[in-house]
Image 1: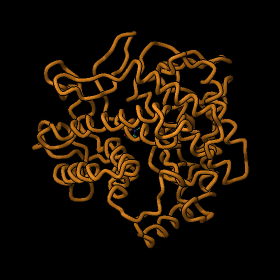
Image 2: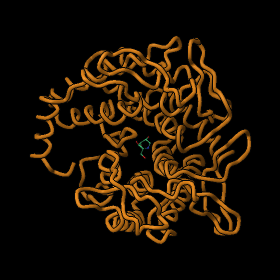
Image 3: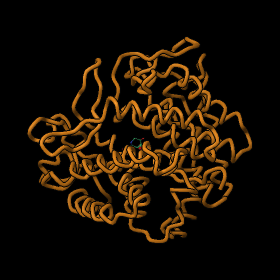
Length: 402
Ligand code: DMJ
């Protein structure tokens, strides 16, 4: 994407000669699928180099062990080296995590298509068939799903969020539909139903500025906070409006695009209103002051969701304001997160003098910098509006029709 061909082939050699899944222990199925499997499949899609597909299938066949539950819902962890022992991690206290069960489908469908083995797709798609039968009327699903030893999973608890543990399931409803050439109406219907629920129950306004945000629901009540993670919703709603089968000028698409712009503006404010120009992990909406940085989570993990929405909204609307915002965010990251050998998390956006931590998630390269780069690239081959679909880790592959 950046024309760094020598580096790309060097990485291909490493993947071909050194990437080994035999000596790896327990891994998160979700993280390994979106980061590693998604990365290998996108590299294969862009280069057609068989080394990437070979390693992707080796990895995918091991991860597919996760689908061995009675209902077909995936367990959260597998032993990669032995391709066995799938179970949910103890921290989740038994149930599966909503976003984790519903964020594997783009990757396994790509794998099925590239290998000619439809079983990979069938197992991942089964998850959405099950979820469709148990999804609440308003399309908003609780964050935990009880699945151990039972044929029909049941939601447990009443926590609902577009941030941590919920986010990407809504992203995949739309993106699976786009990936398949818009021919599988069940996914689009689930997405539209959920977005109705989002507008009816989660969309709120701050005071005094009237900033739009998505609240969490906890035990039936509103929790007026929004995770940085939920900032992906601006881009998602814009993409959904642009592809709406009822037309981009219809009332539903207009509603969604308006919400997309409004919430993305709030996400920009989450950066612009701190002294360092960088957002905290979440913000709390407090009457009279719009929002504040909570003392429990004042950190910034180099997350991508705000700039992801800037990129997609720029593609959909052509409005140069998204480049202005992206440039501001980029400059703040350069100023406060850059270290001698990379970039680091900020411990506290209110106290930048401590400097960045010695940690950099892979999504900073895969997502944050990629979205920023693409936001400013006037002639990229990436076509997010008609040709490509990005998995949740920003690895682009062609939609099946193109
Ligand atoms: C990424 O790993 C993915 O976007 C995931 O869906 C949730 N967010 C992180 C980065 O913040």
